[in-house]
Image 1 (cartoon, rainbow, N blue to C red):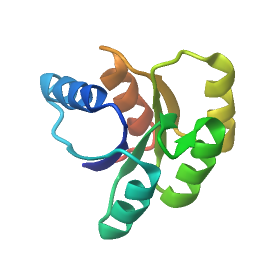
Image 2 (tube, rainbow, N blue to C red; image 1 turned 90 degrees about the vertical axis):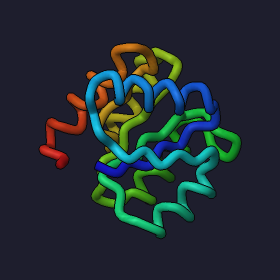
Image 3 (cartoon, helix red, strand yellow; image 1 turned 30 degrees about the horizontal axis):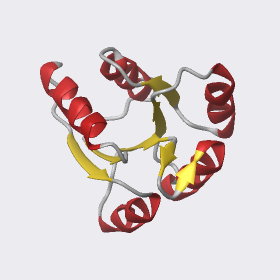
Image 4 (tube, rainbow, N blue to C red; image 1 turned 60 degrees about the vertical axis):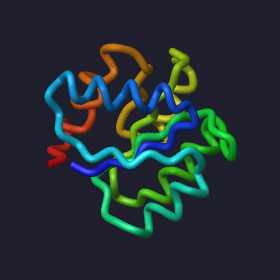
Length: 121
């Protein structure tokens, strides 16, 4: 599966890739730092999911979620956040994201569960 990861902290992007590898998950993770870069890359190829951090240089919070959902269209969007904020998580899900996943060692399992609910290949 090919996914687009929008994450401004390189360490978090590397950790996600390492956790996927440790879990035996073979995904092509295309990493960008800004939403502007994500919009450009989205045009370049087909992605099975958009993984979106909520605090990047050119976007923040639920406004960024709305932009991500618009960009992705019918493709699942999963928020990856360092904050366990129930109100923001509920707002993001209400807007239409597949899941709100808190970054950490168990985030890969949460991410997989969220994407497998709709049988993403």
